Length: 478
Image 1 (cartoon, one colour):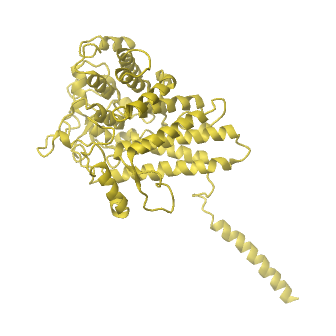
Image 2 (cartoon, helix red, strand yellow; image 1 turned 45 degrees about the vertical axis):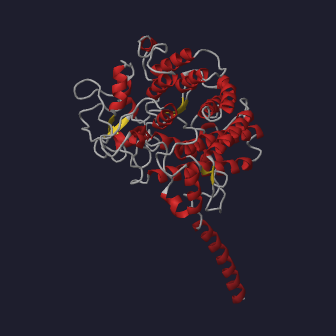
Image 3 (cartoon, one colour; image 1 turned 30 degrees about the vertical axis):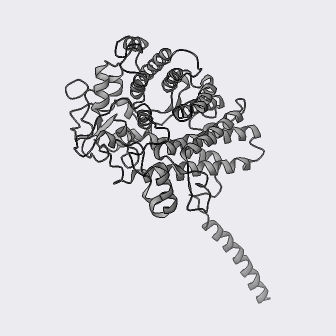
């Protein structure tokens, strides 16, 4: 009898321990089953935080486009991107935090069951694809050839690099499919969609605007494809500031504007306005100067010498609005779309209107977005240096200069457009070893790729024409 009781006790103890051990082995902070919407939200925030923040370990695009410059540490404004391993930091965030999470999100979408209608799941996948295209375009426009077809294929640890132009072709196809898949009458990710809260009409508008941008990137290398993409996308692109693709930050951590984190919460005083943009805007009597910058120590507006040490108290800083904790971030806006349409007209594409009309619409949209009035914009447009008929240079200089001004606070897009238009003429840091030709045209590949994926890295470096910041990307022809 004692043996039977002991055996029953042992069996009961074993089952209770098994149950306890299972609970102990469950990592409640890292769940194994994650809803696809959570991964989608994380990917959206990760890419936008990277593109918005001014942290010099990751985002120095405001330096490269010469919107801001530094006070004390001049390595990055003098184009040192290797000391802080900036390319590797950008690379890892985009692949690991954005693309990998979007991939897993798409894997999980079909597993949500009958509770999520098929049309909603199709919309969710389309949203993930649009974010994929957006992210891949950032990678290509930063590095050139990158791992693409084999990049997220575990356990392949040594993915090949794909030709950048071929990647663009694939992205165009994926974007067209995503646009075709959208059902505006069905749901999406709802509140887990941090861009449009599940508004599928807004996603379609965003996708068409992105297609318009990507099409124009091809204009100097594949005019036929560029024309088709631009003409198809133009009717469905953003048509007012109310349709801007906006990422809304919150007023309390941890979901605050990263500029606030680095400029206010940190208490650091590392950045001032760059003389490049302030001087250019002052010369044009641009009404956006007080909307972009604070007054300097003399009650005027001035920028620090680009690429040199500058006294923080002396020069203008980014406007207070920009460093508010809940200040929004733009992915693409009406002003950019109108500048693209002005360029399209100049290139002989059929998008309606004249180049001058679209140029003027773009400037009005930018002035209004930043808090200026239509009267301010119209007065500005009436001046000889700004009016499309009388502004200096050819259409590339006119559009390129004004687009660069309008893209302020979007350093990456400003850098991209400077490389496409070659305008405005930027300043050269006051270091005799630096020339205009040293302004980066791309990022070099990460050290981790050089060390761990050496064969693929070597092949890619050769294919792009040398792993150097001065090597132009495939679309940067002039």
